[in-house]
Length: 601
Image (cartoon, rainbow, N blue to C red; front, side, top):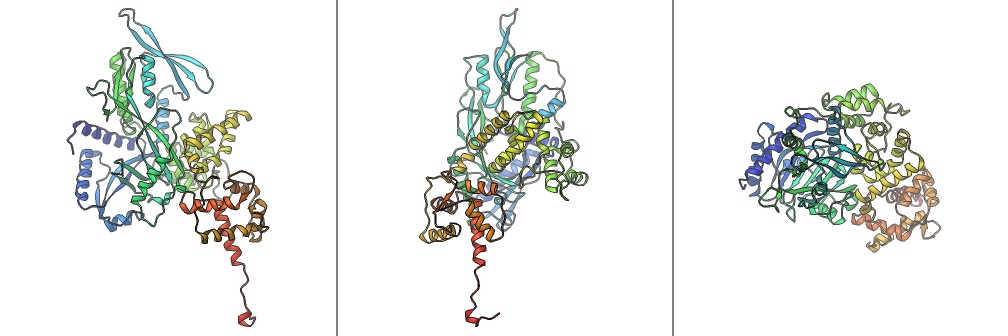
């Protein structure tokens, strides 16, 4: 709308790169229709013109043409949408991908073409040598440290490239302590909610939230992802999502969903914060303004820095950087070949590849689809490593947790993909930590056991991996803020009638009127209604609600739980559902009085 030529070029480049990404990694990326709901008549032509210009700029790279929906058609495609005052919607297409797996595919493809790749490697300092002719210092390598072993060593190089995202300035200052900071880190929080919050194949965009930010609400990995926020942050290796940001996203989502859909804090299954490395161009006249494109900077000593940009344009960022390196350091290289170059797993992938996995190996259809969409044509290698289940069906493919299609073979295969820690496995090889922190925690012991067997970990190492991974889930993936929705300080705000109802339910288990229930009490009730449950599972269920960790659930703790459930802060409580179901079964067993029918049959 502002006829900004720089913005136009950036969008044009991004759309070209988007098309390339969809071509070279078809198993990891796909077009996604995104709905922009309209609640004022004048906005319909305004947004329509903007979206059509987007299609026009895309040209031959346009995924599919955008279109307008009437109110009734919009609700048909997105039934959860707030229908009051809705006048229609506009749908446009964008790309979506599995970001961690895409990152890994880039690294694996580079390794396939001869690159030496290393993770858990930290730069301690830059190496320099003096040019005898000019007397000037040039960067000639880096002092590196293996974070896992503590070993340090030197890597010599004709050219050093600084591509470290939010850590850009830290490396620039290793080169020149007086270098001005160009990175302005910004925190972006995302949350994951159950899949029923959005249709399987339609996203939602809120272009103008209460504070002017943009919120996306998209189907992702059969769940729903919502975000993002945008706030200044300090640079850290361990960013933590704040409760304030989580609630901001939930409140914005509530504005767009029907009142029939209760948006509950307890439905946030995972939350995380990422650091967006926004940069200023040191060569720009206005060094305070954020560059909307990527910046390639060359220091006096020859250190090349690439900063800014975004995921979609990673390939063109790399091309510009390597071109600069070739020019500045007189390197010999041919033209770039990365446009159209298939990433790991993409070349022989097809939408029906999963059917062969089902037919050839006896995998569940859901597991086969997941493997095909995650590993592409390498899915067959994972299937070959899958364990026999011992069941009639599926024949192979033991799941790590029942509700997700991740299988044990992926842990073994993940080690071949450079996974070194349990955190690697739950977040960057599988996406379990990003989809459900509780499910990830349940899978951890088995994951550590499998990794330990492959990597020869002793018991001390296994315990350390478990502790580190649990700490990661607790702080960085939102488990802490989720667990704090129910504490021993939680208020009980229930109506008197509700308190009486919940007390009666509690006393069905606390038959001795002790004021608390234990595993024995729950087992007794379950046996009376012919339900069997092992003691370890019962212990886990009670432990979720046992706030003071004394091995029993007191009446006050139960009422705190029910109050938190009513407020939407807690959802999916196994104890609450178990007690409600047991109460209903017990009530159904009350004898029907027959005295008024003269004691009939």
